[in-house]
Length: 113
Length: 113
Image 1 (cartoon, each protein chain N blue to C red):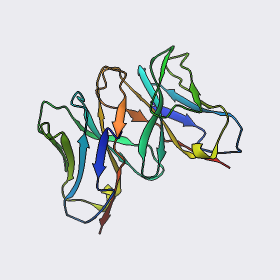
Image 2: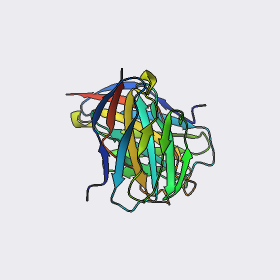
Image 3: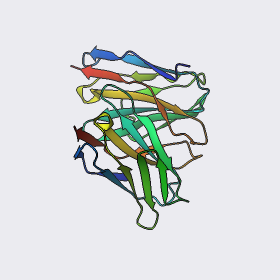
């Protein structure tokens, strides 16, 4: 059973536009929701993360929106740039329990100049 | 500060051969994990460790073995390679609290022929 479902699988956005990637989770006990960015040939790198006690977290052009009641969270990339072209993974975990992360299947983002 | 170091970066094995993928971290992280990444399936947990001498199975452990004799090292052994194990393998580590998420290595691309 897929613990974290991610959509869309791929996304093409014009430079300057807004990229939105959505994730839904099953386990209401999850208490840490990170987003990872992966460039070709590299390992995933932590981009931004949120705890369920807040509904939004913003870091520069990247914002996580979190809806606890709907068990959904999303990544918004404002003013998308060609350098943002990468694969994005959402994840969920139970902190302090072995730190197992459940990853979404990834979204390949292409930002067209 | 090297972070998480994986070796080798590329490997080709014949069916039935065995090998060890090496992983070392210099951040004194308690938790270490191995993931495999396959197209359309995201990152799937193979094995993880919450500290030296303690390991446990993840989502897809069959055909793999791990040990954790030191805090720094967490090797992954393929016992008898199969074509289904062709994948990109990532080692990751984190603090026990989970804050900050995982730090990933750069990956090992394994092809089994």
